[in-house]
Image (cartoon, rainbow, N blue to C red; front, side, top):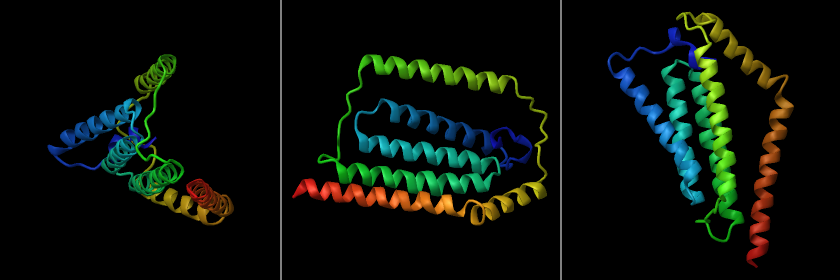
Length: 180
C-alpha cells in the first residue's frame, strides 16, 4: 500500500531519483545474489542488504513506521536468528548448497508468475497522486497499531517471542550435544 503513495513521499530534490534507482538496483542485485549464492553466510549478508534496501525505500516514501519495523524485525531479528541458527546447528558455517536443475526451473517459473502478477497490479493501479490517508489519519493509524499490539495482540506477540527463544535454545542444545 505504501509503495504507491507518491504524494506522501519525501522530497529530496534532484538526488531523489538517483537514491531511488540506487536502492532499487541494490535490492535487485542483492535479492538475486541470495537466490544464486551457494554459501549460506553470503546468502545472509545479501539478505541483509536486500532488507536494508527495502527499509530505505520505505523511508523515501515517508513510511517511517514500516521502515523501522522492516529494519528492526527483519534485518535485525530474523536475520540474526537465521545466522545463529545456522552457525549453531552446522558443523561447517560455510555450508554449501547444491541446487538441482529442476528446482531452479520451478523457482524460475514461480518468480516469473509472481513478477507477472506484480506488473499486472502496477499497470491496473490508478496513480492520481492522492494517497488514501491524510497525514493526521496516518498518525492515528500508527497509534491504533501500537494500541492493538499492546492490548489485543499482546499474547500472540509474546508467544511468538517465546517460541523463537525456545527454538534458539533447542538449536544450541542440539549443536552442543553433537559436539560432545
